[in-house]
Length: 194
Image 1 (cartoon, one colour):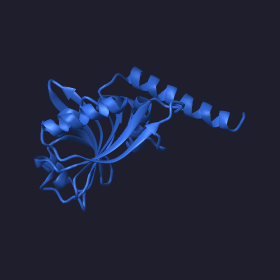
Image 2 (cartoon, helix red, strand yellow):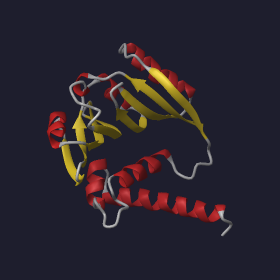
Image 3 (cartoon, helix red, strand yellow):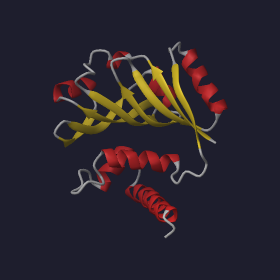
Image 4 (tube, one colour):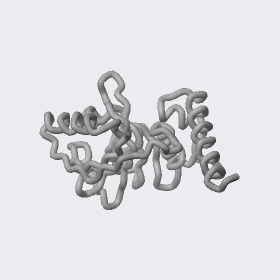
């Protein structure tokens, strides 16, 4: 059994001085490198605000950027140990969707937030059916590739650039994408009895 858990957390220092009514940041993944969380994010907004975030971003369309940030704050440190589906920053704070293995792991996550005295509000917990056609990792990578414009025609990002952003090899990324596509197409034909 897997759980998709939606959580609301307060703003951190690095997000407080940004106008979130005119800009948006969607966190696609977090990895821990040398004990410092590295975030893969999609930013929509103006370049001036983007420069305040102090990350490494590549422009993928007129007001859309894909890149990484090193954020050494408690929330990101905690969440770098879990699989996140996404994180979104709004005026009210952070909204995260985290994939957890069971309720024991949810209790562990909440205890970690409590240890840092982080005000945490659970918005929704959804049990995921075991017959899902994609693994959590496949779904996460497909979503990142889709949002980065990998499936657009013409492509907005090359497979090698996407692999660099995800910090995985091109061959590993290609295999994950091929298996996910096969699962989706196979499921499509099975549902139609073909």
